[in-house]
Length: 182
Image (cartoon, rainbow, N blue to C red; front, side, top):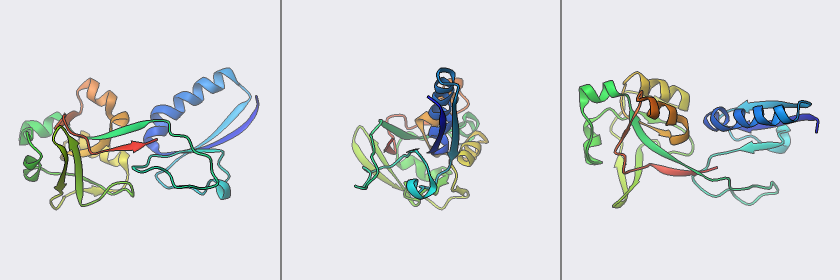
């Protein structure tokens, strides 16, 4: 097998899953070259010449001429830095979030003014209070969370090592925001 494979993926999926898969592929097939683009945008696969795209979507993909396969789902959860909790305390209920600094992630797949939290009691909508920080890149949200700026939403795949090391802590661990289809 030889040639160039053009791949488009979201940054979190690309960094955590695609790059390791590329390393394994290239070890087995040294004549394969990979051109990987990481972006939140949704490319026109045919027009932009991508061979494959890995997308996250809260919904099933619409019918099209492009072949798609459901690879799984990723949950988005609330988290923050331990130092934020030292100062502000851990919220115990969804209502408690109203007295916290809730950081807003402005991406097309998320509502920017509310969090829909799924938990043991079903779905609970939480209207986000005015935020002192809003960003459109998940990686920038990660930095804000590590800096202790507040509570924010991140996909579990992007924070699993931070949760393991304790640099981030799950908030309301019985709840998740939404499942994103891969």
